[in-house]
Amino acid sequence: MWPQGARRNADGSLVIGGVDVRDAVAEYQSPVFLIDETDVRTRAREFRGAYTAAGASRVYYAAKAFLATTIARWVHDEGLGIDVASGGELAVVQRAGIPGEAIVMHGNNKSMEEIEQAIRYGVGRIVVDSFEEIARIADAAARANIVQPVLVRVTVGVEAHTHEYIATAHEDQKFGLSATHDVDEAVRRISALPSLTLVGLHSHIGSQIFDASGFEVAAARIVAVAQRLWDQQGIEIEELNLGGGMGIAYLDEDDPLDVADMAREIGAIVEAQCQQAGIPRPALAFEPGRAIIGPAGVTVYEVGTVKPVRLEGDETRWYVSVDGGMSDNIRTALYDAEYTVTLASRISEAPDIPCRVVGKHCESGDIVVRDAMLPADLAPGDLLAVAATGAYCRAMASNYNYLPRPAVVAVSDGRMQVVLRRETLDDLMRLDPGA
Ligand code: LLP
Image (cartoon, rainbow, N blue to C red; front, side, top):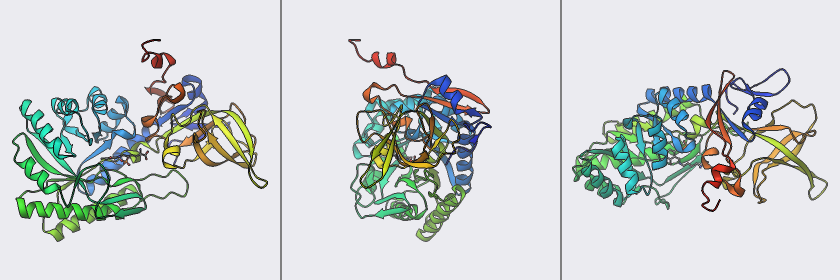
């Protein structure tokens, strides 16, 4: 759950990547996100190795989980491509100097400008998400005088979260083209357009998945599509991108399948299904986001107030207010996400008491950790660390209540490097023409 380099130093303070969290706060204020560089690089390498061994020609890092030029360079150094979902994400990746062929572009409503940006930069794969888009991409590619490789995103009617998945005949959501109703026609149209070349199919079934069962059902449906395209249109699917969604531990009891086991299982499933269908196995591709960056990140907050609140019966819950909240971690409010928190600036011998770690926003749903056990002597000025906040926290941060978004600092071998600096009030004022 904690980054691999996490430990306590002699006086009990939490150390991440060789950096005492107290030093990070002294330098960059709190809250602050710390990202353990070694942890990110190790995970990226591990995913690349395991999924390549299982038949992947490319593993992309899903940049939506968290993106900055430094992160793009780390994961690309470790052999990953990058999945972008907007022109903004693409701009950051361009700025990082990542070559176009290593990029896959997503989005269910890419603007013409975003499509043109992708084509100008030579993005290796654009994932088609609608009929309208086929014409738009074809048009932009024709004007640029290139042939753009595309995948078709297929809705396979499988939704997976953690260890559960639901398979329904019709998936009622906005992404992709239906495996049963629309994909064949989309492929026909793409094949007829000289500025497009179809390289494969794409499916993403959800997030925070702990085992391969959802992938198994999704792969079966998508292999059936590939077989049909071969039989009826003579089209061979060269690449099958099964998306991301590999889960991580947020709590002690979370137990996602090991990276190598998950990769091996998915690889074997697709192999068996293709054999059964009598089609050559396509090269695979994957797009993990959370599993690369999530566990490498920690948020450090300072405690401002500790308020005992009497509950029904004889119980008390201590409301521990920190100096951030739903503006730097919306996941608890939005998804009922659960997190692990620890007293980070010291060790305490005091008994644990039931606490709720809350933010400083004007909203009672502004909760960071709903149920936590923290030492009874917790006091203003103490630092708390929340584990596994590397993914979808800073990436989904807001300026609610005009709070500046925290810095993201890479830590490694005792050194700190700013990945994103902390916002200032001036940054926010700059948007207000009357300021
Ligand atoms: N590929 C596609 C096409 C996706 O839509 C996503 C995530 C990924 C890859 C990466 O999924 P990951 O490996 O990170 O689970 N904000 C939510 C997660 C939304 C994910 C959206 N798409 C959260 O905080 O849990």
